[in-house]
Length: 315
Image (cartoon, rainbow, N blue to C red; front, side, top):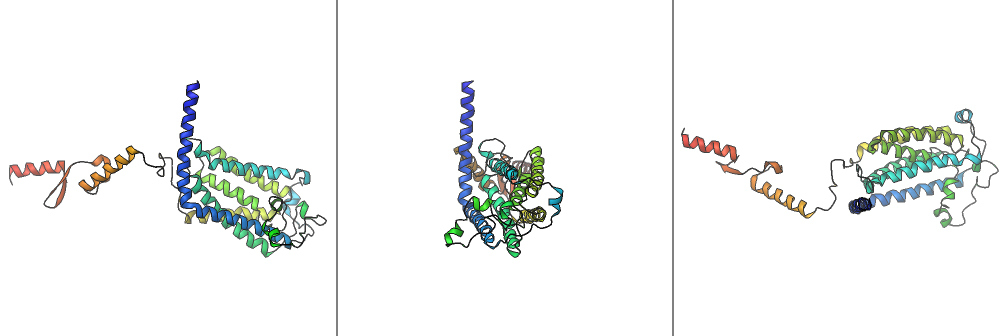
């Protein structure tokens, strides 16, 4: 029993090392995209912080979702954040599953390059919309009488640049259309829908997205229009960008093509290239038959025997 556990632990360690090597190589090629995506995430947070200075509290707008869904109350508003945190952490763990599990369909770095592209495009559209028109926030801390409803004029530029993370993100006002929580949730669900392998998890992901939508409205964090616009905008952004971005390589066929070649693989590759040079254009290792040239034409063994027999028998 101890020997079996030790053997499995050794295999897991080798798998982690191999995946780490692969992902480091990918990160070396794509670090600019990852870094740019992270910087733009910060810029999105900076924009959301900036619009809070422009926010003016007022009467909550008439909203059909507020009529249909009972208000959770300020003491139960954490339920929406709990569901979102669960979805966020679950997706992050899934993107790193090739390091642990044998089923490897994705590369972690490449998936996050794609996810960041979806997020940045959606957030860019979001910044345009909530700066175009500032609506009175329906959240509890954005209503008239709350100390957080209006931010005092910043004393320095650093006060704006630091964005008071994480409280400045979770207690923002004015960045309404459209919901940032739904951007992340839908991008994660759509990504797993395409690259995930478990059908039940895909169905659970969509269920979480629907439940998250209702909870956001019930907790009065957003108007119904914020959630509705997010549903069709994010889906359209992912649909069009997915066609423009290069497709991810499928790993289900075998070992990673990015892993360093072993000595045996190198010898096999060298042998294949040698046969390719000697025998013509064939690249199939199974087609390493001896070829020769007759009257400027390349013939294999069978054709050569037939040509010799015809020459011996005469015309």
